[in-house]
Image 1 (cartoon, rainbow, N blue to C red):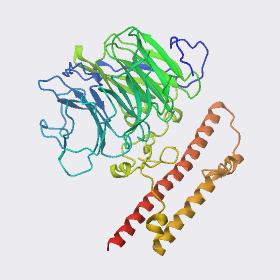
Image 2: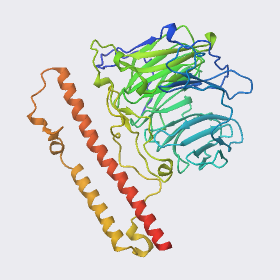
Image 3: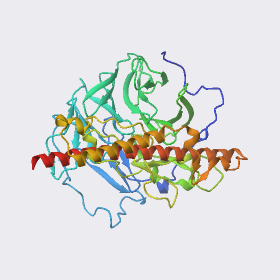
Image 4: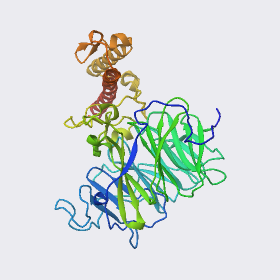
Length: 490
């Protein structure tokens, strides 16, 4: 495996892509948020978080720790609606006491509810379960102590079973968060990583950092082999940090420069050259930090596929930047809006701590669609603590009723697996209640694409159903184990 070097904006060959002509559009001044006292801290962070209702911005104040909450649909921060806060909040809902030094990073688990990861200048990563009644937590559920310097970045894969970190010791690590063990480690000397990012289910990592000559640099890695990057590129000689942002729905990667006004964007593909340069949004106003709107808060009528909230401290301004796919049709564009992650967690904190993995719940962005529709396609979850066969425990002592229930579970699982192993021609005979082979062939490229996406969605739905059943089976096994233990105790 060899590293590839050269400029990103090359690629002379034409490459077909529906995101080839995506362009960035800054909001007009009346849609910006003015007079915001943006922090002057030099800490390398986004300083901004966004959801469809509010924007949270770290502000400049004595003592630190303050942030401002702005209603998303208001353009004057002093025009506070009645349903928002009427006074400052000085008492937190929960307080976490564990780090010996200042906390630099916090990350919510992507699919488990109330699981929080924190990293501090004591070189530790702590996992907290907030699904408890206590207002003050002094003991995390897990401490990951594998770093020898400050952790600069944390990123999860899609189902949260793996954690990637970039550390000041120049190393990238892939960690099993529940076991606290390092699965892969990169110490590639010509790339000093500052930020690292899982690229969804692409089995790849993306990092930004600097080269030997202090040029800003990006690198792409195979998550299962971090010895040498798949790709390594010098971008420019600027000194500002590069923040990577990945949209798994469109497979688009955005690289935001701190201290400049540029946003480069690429399209990720599973085959070489992996990283395909699309375009660059340029602005003369430098950004201090950036916030990202979740997909469910986008304007689908305007073909908006992403939205940034750019912090401009020199003007005390928050400026929305919309990434738009140019389309003439005003109808809903299904090909650029696949099912996306919903706001609800996919599993409880305790289930994740017990070893279960589950991808995010999905929601359609089509107006009027149901809230949560399905689960994404993943491999069978591999629990951290494997559930053993109940009939093999305690010398095989098991009630007849429990054995019958376990037999039913096994039969159900075998049936589902046998159905899954059917040839693709048999599995796809029926689609939406009709035989797809009896449908008239598509006459245009657009009809062909629509049929293709419908078939892919049906395949995904069937596989997700199997995945759901596997999780239910494991939950039933745990319940049987608990029932049996209660019976023995009585």
